[in-house]
Image (cartoon, rainbow, N blue to C red; front, side, top):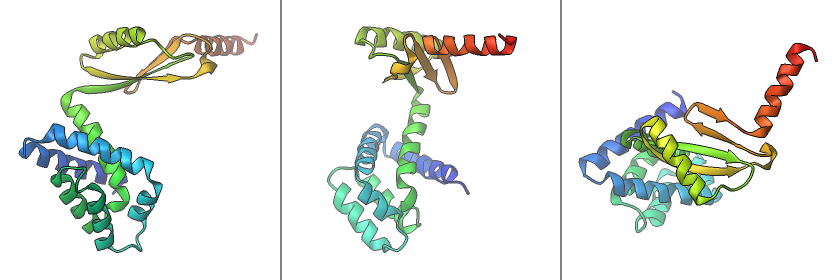
Length: 181
C-alpha cells in the first residue's frame, strides 16, 4: 500500500474521531502546530523514522513533547500510530489531515507567483476573484520569483493561469521554433 493511501486512512480516522468529540477545529489547530514542530526538528523526524528505536521510547518522546501542547486525542492517536509501526509517516499523516480538513470545509489553497512581493490590497483583490471563480474559501500564498520579469502565475489545484512576461516570452519562442524562424 502506498504511503499516501495509508496516510489518508489514518487522517480520515483522526478527522472522524475529532468530529465525534465536536473538536475538529481545535484538533486542526493542534495538527498545524505538530506539523510545524516536526518540520523544524529533523532529529525528531529521524527518531520517528528509525525502525531500531523501540516503540515505547518513541511513544514516550512524543508524549513528552506534545502532552501539554496538543489535545489528548492527538497524543492517544500518536500512541496508536507508533504501536502500529507508522511513526515513520507521522508527518505525512498530519499533512494529509490538513488537506482533508480543507477539502471537508471547502477551503482551497492557491499560490500566486510574482516577480515582486504583491501588496496586501492586490493579494486581497486576487483572493476575492479566485474565491468567486472557484466558489470556495481560498487561502492565497504569494511566492516571489524574479525570473518572471513581470506579471504573475496563479495556481489553484491543478489549474494554472500564466500571465507573466517570462511565460509570454517562452510561448513566443516556441511559436518561432515551430515556424522554423
